[in-house]
Image (cartoon, rainbow, N blue to C red; front, side, top):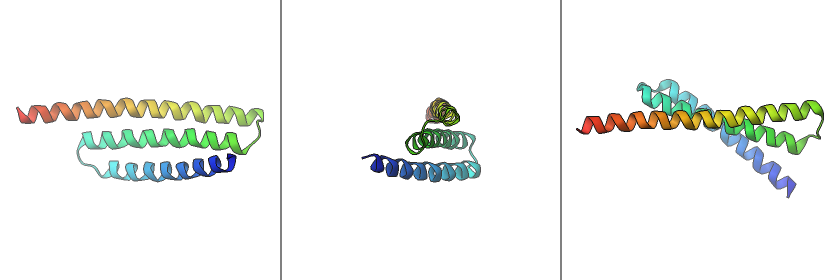
Length: 106
């Protein structure tokens, strides 16, 4: 069971890294500032999920030395903060986009 969790976390890590790279590249190529903000916020969520997954992998692979626990906790906190700030900015940019769409229809 633990081996399955390790493989699952590794697959999730790879998915989050690829997703963050794709959204990073697409946000740099976007011309519209709202599209750029939406894609960067999704990239921020992916990076946060990657850090959380990395800390969970570290918890499963290594035994708990003091330095390891501190690094795991730091990755976990930074990852959760990135997820929170990405979701917050995503809701901000999606509200702006919806307001612009409603103004253009009127």
